[in-house]
Image 1 (cartoon, one colour):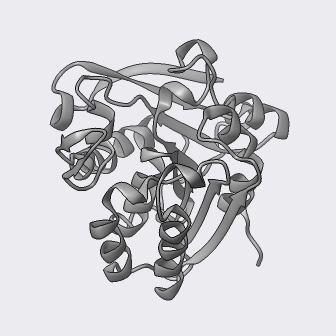
Image 2: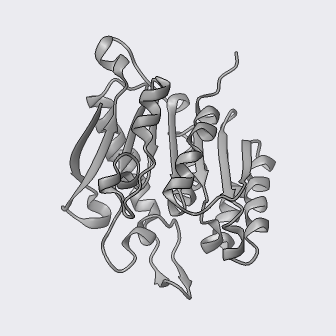
Length: 255
């Protein structure tokens, strides 16, 4: 079951409601006492429904969870669609200048403060969550992948695991890599990272940036699963194909 409701992201876009999608496993209805881990996801409009997705193709996350019987709550928040470059601004931890985008004000910290300080308490109050850090995860692609890495480094008291698909670290690598290297990570912090091989030619030094990001995390004791996706592209159809890989990492447990 997927619920959809609106909430304003006041620090970034004022009082205009933003869509929030919440997936609840069948077990939540069958057992009122049950509690579930929570995965927060960026670009919520692209997560569940093709008709809501920017390019007409979603990740099909609901179908995957239903098909596999995964007992997980997924909270997916729509991005900032305001011009110019509202999404890029909201999903960048740092202000930067780029030939493609010009100067972009980084509002990533404001968004994460809202997600952890406003949205998460509301989710924990309304739904049968396991609210502790150990059972709270975050995931996203592209700029959402960048923000997932930022979340695990800057908000590690909230999130224990992150999945960063095609993370756009290259845009702000001069600031992002030092942050990853200087952050303190709790024992057992887990990160999944991937990048498509067809994406590697888009930006000079992409492979090196990807490797440097993984190295920065592993040097700090983070448990990293890093993949290059054969013939992988920068699109929802490809990211959908990676769901089984990153979900195994997020939910893997061995006593």
